[in-house]
Length: 234
Length: 106
Image (tube, rainbow over all chains, first blue to last red; front, side, top):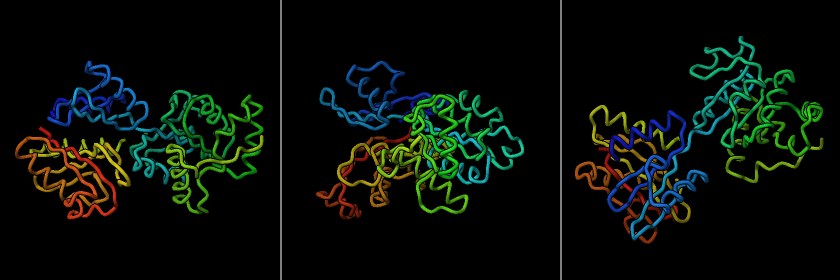
């Protein structure tokens, strides 16, 4: 790998730009796509590897190529700078997620409680909408306060994020479902919300709850059967 | 995968500090391999390791090949599998097969 290729990979990473690294295995020659113009079969394989987020192999004119997608980090948007969030943030970072914490309550969302983390103090619907969650984003609401959680969930439901989770008991969630229905969300849309949040591992402490949430995010991302839930009645 | 990119950042830092570095990448797997294609292991001339290409079974053999590649500059494509006696030697007991590409970070 040349210093130029390494620098280009690092630049794409800081610009959060998806690139595929193509390596010819016979001699180690490398190209970045879409930066370099490539033979159509290579370009198509590169585009597919990025879309599927999976490495691929291709033989073209007798030469074996390795196609290695480098997508921007998955994102986790945590609404509520609460105790569980303090445990969840470092775990999610270790799992490779770029984490943002949203909480308009400045006493909670402080740099002391979340060192080095991007903190947003806007109202939660504006904040989540501005972060524009995409298919590589997860949104978790943890404030336990409908004033803060509901607007964030409203914004998350309008996005195509791959995971939405909301802290709260079944009873709390039933009331939340009623409120979200009043806001115009369909039962199918509301069924996207994982609530009570997290896999059921009988978690008790804040770090245990954080672990159950992160496990559910990963299970959803990887399509594990464990993440499937029966739809909740509206 | 963000973890593979962190390995590159570590490799770049070692290289910037003046150490020769090689990067090994899993390019193909069959059966039950613990790390998917794209997983990286960086190796420095002084023997530092970052990342992984298996559950620890073949890292030693890959590091040896990496040191060769650091010296010669020639990339290598390593084959590990149950039919390969070398894989038994280095302990790929999981029953998987994989190919690892080793290149110098110039």
